[in-house]
Amino acid sequence: MKGKKITILGAGISGLASAHWLEKAGYDVTILEQNSEPGGAMKTKFVDGFLVDFGPNSGLETTPKIKEIVNDVGLSNEMIYANEEGNIRYILKNDQLLPLPTSPGKFLSSKLFSTSAKIRLMKEPFIGKSEDGYNQSIAEFVERRLGKEFLDNAIDPFVSGVFAGDPSKLSVKSAFPKLYRLEEIYGGLIKGMFKGAKERKQRGEDSKQNAKMFSFKNGMQSFPNAIAKKFKGNIFYNCSIENITRNDSKISTEIFKDGKRGNITSDVLLSTIPAFKLSKLTDSIDPNLTSHLNDIFYPPVLVLFLGYDKNVINQKLDGFGFLIPSKEKKKFLGAIWSSTIFINRAPKDKAAFTIFVGGARNSDFTEEQVDSRIKEVLKEFHSVMGITSPPVLKEMKFWNKAIPQYNLGYIEHEKYFDKFEKENPGIFLSGNFRGGISVGDCIKSSFTNFEKIKEYLN
Image: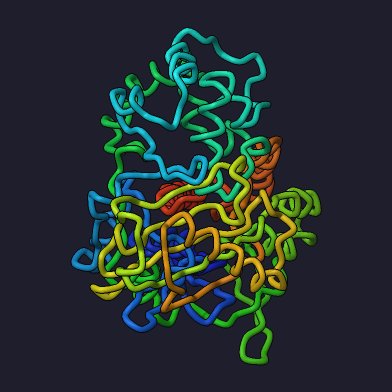
């Protein structure tokens, strides 16, 4: 362990959490970051009493490893949980907000689904496994098991809200592995939910449906900021990574910083940067890896944060927000009621919302179209929410490449990443294009990174 050097590319939550476990175990870790601050997609800003998150607005506490890091970096007193009011999730149907049912009783009485759709869903335990295996989209999977109406009114908007994705393109095995596993292992979703709950309890994990939603008093960027403080002197910001080469058992990373070029030699290189950035560095090592990385699609997403006086809003703010099925033909994907979930997101007499625009449904959306699209979005949003006056605050961030899409065929990328690591010992690939896109997934992957690196070095 002593004398072993590890270089990590990227100071987002994936890279920093991995660094945390490695440093805790006594390894010498250096982190290289292109930006001037830590956090990656986690970006928080304070404006006129509003707290704005431009990346993840929250996380789900699906693994005890999250709390372990929070405790280790002294952030326990800053960690906050969502109000119970935020548990209600609405779906827009025919310009009306309808709650997504959360229990069998509420499902039976829900106006979101027709009687025939409810009867169709009850047939799910009697539907057999697919012969297609993993060669099916989440849309095909859900329609076969739960019916078209459930796909249109529940899964389609959910996929847009989580992945900014297209359910007809996302692979069920790669994008929703736990859902896929319920069918493969238990033969069905309903049977698997009950049996799978026992397994999660044994591992000390919660399902995403039951996990508590968390954030921090000063926003999500507090998390990577707190971890990064431990590495002061070992994180190099504003650092451009020019090339990666491998010589025997050592990996050399060529960097450009402060107008000077240099090399960092290490025993292990862990990349946690996005696939489209890593692909620019891998030709000299493996051109096939470059091809796989370039094939991963990242759609554009505009994050629009809006603040309003409460007295101009006629919709009761009693939920997480709402998602929009693609058949509703709106100009945005949905809206989070930010100050309902976490009350410190806005002054007392104000309300805050985060709206998402673009995604895989609008893959040709560009930054030049933002101003005109916002006008359309505000008109639709005001109509849905019964808002009678313009926002008092408007902040935005356009992510040209937002969330990696685990589309059909993604399994071939995953297999190649495994193959690459075996053929190039000492180089490890991570980030949210591998192992899941959520904050919880990234924390789980970070511990997997630690275990793989530890095994390699020992």
